[in-house]
Image (tube, rainbow, N blue to C red; front, side):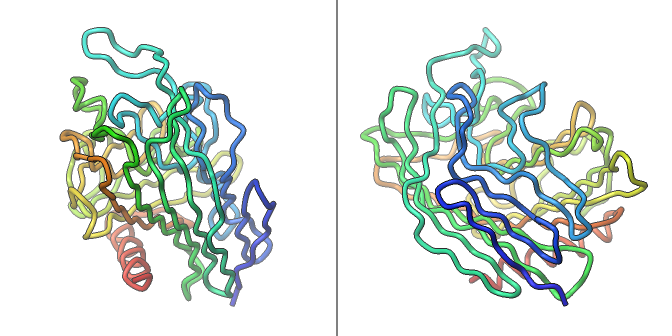
Length: 306
């Protein structure tokens, strides 16, 4: 049975490996430009067979970074990157691109079937004011099956500013069906035109905005005759569970459980918000039934994490 390993570029990134494949690189000190709202991200993310299922800085949205915790509307601040949606004006480049800055590595544990990292981040506005302190934990879990592995993501964000920071989306600001924000996955270019999966069945972009405990995406790879599937699972204790889902298939492949899709979540001074997710990365094609099986694997791992 394959075992997990880790390669730590101290002060920069962590690679999680299995059987000679880098399953994921977590860059916790990025060097992205300020207008892209620098924040930690996972890229590349690969299947057990070594096929890449993420995209970094695509030309159409250079602020998309593999898998990243990305929030476009935190009070007046943008922790997503790029321009901000302003109702009646469209997208406007404002002086509000914040950053999520790594401050301290709190724990790093490496085992045969699990690698976990916990660190503290300070969220700062474009003007340098600290507004949020975050404790974030990621883990990679290798189940006893050859076709998949599971990433878990947990965050506890505390508003350390003197003002409320309601968290929303372009939809809560007036743009219809654009409720993105949260844990966002951007697929490789070849995944354009892929298939979405939900507990009710499979389809395309008409499923954007649907509520459910999980959603999956199957796409095909260039150069090899192969497909891969990514399934994201929302923990039952998350605010707004089950969330609405932001998903794209036509312009690019994207998936995002979006708790702030159509309603803001209050985030008052001193308040802590917590979210937990699983991302199942699997080799092979899928229908709704297999996606549901993969979602169950993610749910089991989330439960096993406590």
